[in-house]
Length: 287
Ligand SMILES: Cc1cc2nc3c(=O)[nH]c(=O)nc-3n(C[C@H](O)[C@H](O)[C@H](O)COP(=O)(O)OP(=O)(O)OC[C@H]3O[C@@H](n4cnc5c(N)ncnc54)[C@H](O)[C@@H]3O)c2cc1C
Image (cartoon, rainbow, N blue to C red):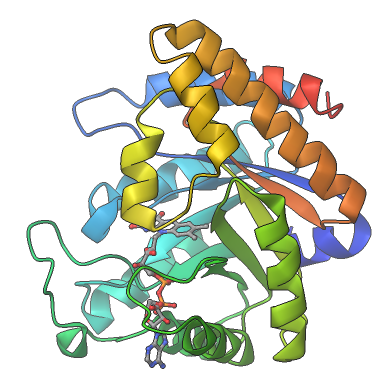
């Protein structure tokens, strides 16, 4: 089923983001997690695409098996960075062959150890060009990424918003946001997006804090950490289990507030952790 149709018929749509295991880890690990995720009744799962196309085959395989073997609707992430035309079309054809109807179309980050990578040498310089290609080629439901605090590369937030509008105009059905820890950012963003004529559903991304690795992730993604979260992380710095529990409560509180505000769905970055995901859903009143 196309997720855009789901969004028209159900609110909130609950999605779990998972990532493929490293190449030396057997696929069985994530498959057994899928069984546990299925018990939590997500509306769909989305499967990330390894940076620079690493483990690309695994993304499609997991998304396809989630759908066919576990009966969970799925969406494959796809980044075009470093791919040739032929590779891009081959990946899209493979998705279609596997019966996948939903794709998160991304430009992707510079390849590892190439921070100054020149995107003008890439087949597509921006996700909007990839989205145009996918829209012209077949009948996927297309999602794209949105950045409430601006993409780390953008010089001006208003330019980032105009670039987002371009992605929507090229055929994006719905947007998924980068994670954030202050819901006011999301609510402000909705107003700004609307003022630019971005009218498709915008689904907030929630990243639970499971440990202090979040500092590295926020540094990379350019997301801010509110003072109350800094206080929380300091308080439980020597107690990982209490930090995990506090992180679960923080995420659940964000979710409760977003749903009360009328968010069309929740995109939960599960970090492949079914147990913690369940705890969040229970606390948020969703399980
Ligand atoms: C929900 C979500 C899921 C993600 N999943 C993955 C994943 O599975 N695998 C992975 O490797 N990465 C993933 N990412 C990260 C993503 O690949 C990076 O953030 C990447 O750097 C940008 O990809 P994009 O599609 O947003 O790029 P774009 O939309 O192309 O934007 C990149 C930059 O270019 C600018 N830009 C866009 N269009 C134009 C234009 N026409 N002219 C000038 N500037 C322009 C934008 O303002 C922005 O600064 C995800 C991000 C999000 C939010």
